[in-house]
Amino acid sequence: MEILLLTLNLHTYEQHPRHCPFDTMHQHEREVHIIAEAIAHLRIDIVCFQEVGEYLHDPIANTYGESPSNMAYRIRDRLRQWGHWYHIHQDWSHIGYQRWREGTAILSRHPMRHNYSAYVSADQRKDNYMSRNVTLSCIDVPWFGLLHVANVHLNWAHHGFYEEYNKLSELIRSRRHFGIIGDLIVGDFNAPAGEHAYNHVVRNAEYVDQYCELHPERFFQPSYHGCIDGWKDSTPKRIDYIFKRNGDPLQVKAMDVIFNQHFYPLVSDHFGYLARFEML
View 1 (cartoon, rainbow, N blue to C red):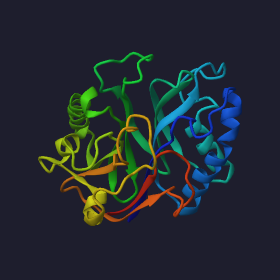
View 2 (view 1 turned 120 degrees about the vertical axis):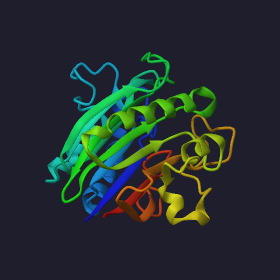
View 3 (view 1 turned 135 degrees about the vertical axis):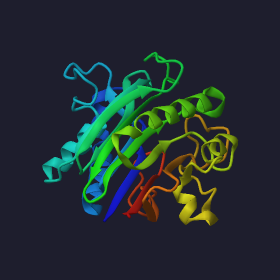
View 4 (view 1 turned 60 degrees about the horizontal axis):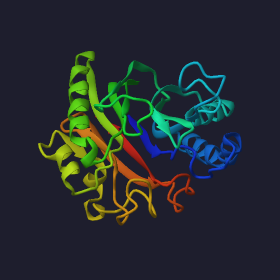
């Protein structure tokens, strides 16, 4: 039994910013189509999105994620139009770029159990862009059992990363009584490979960097291109990860960079990672 997992930071509708938000969303039809096409064609089982944008003043939405302006909703809707059914769980952290609700989303071809979201940052104000809410789900994988996925977008080391990661770890541990067989932490960590915040995650070998597991020679290969928000004064770094809890009965067999212009076109200021796991 194998599963494919994708993680991708969507850049909160900032690939084609326009004065009018509805024009901005229309301009992102290309990105919606490319991402949905990749998910459908590759038959990806689980998708973790960060920086999922939804128009702040959309009069249709009652709950985050139920509005047609929500980019994860648009991608899932496109997949359903093509006959691919995905469950979805998402929540938002803060207002991004003055006009978007910005959050994280998990999509799954398999049933999702025990969906939950929680703030891991000290500040939980929606008007503070450093407020961080994580989404978690137990994916009921056939012939394997519950695979726990935590989808995160954490702050920089000097803005609360360590406290946020420690709180996230406590939250994950509190959910293991559900009968979890495997455990993954996925997303944009804002923790460059090899630096202190990254080492905080891997220091006791509880979690293993799956890209490094397969490609140690590419340890410092960046996960984004150019200058992006939060990293404009540095060279590109690897800050997006899939971490697996050490000893869990799943093994990464392949992990590729995707949406990097070589393997599907660019759709964001971040590249994506596509991992194939064998469920043991």
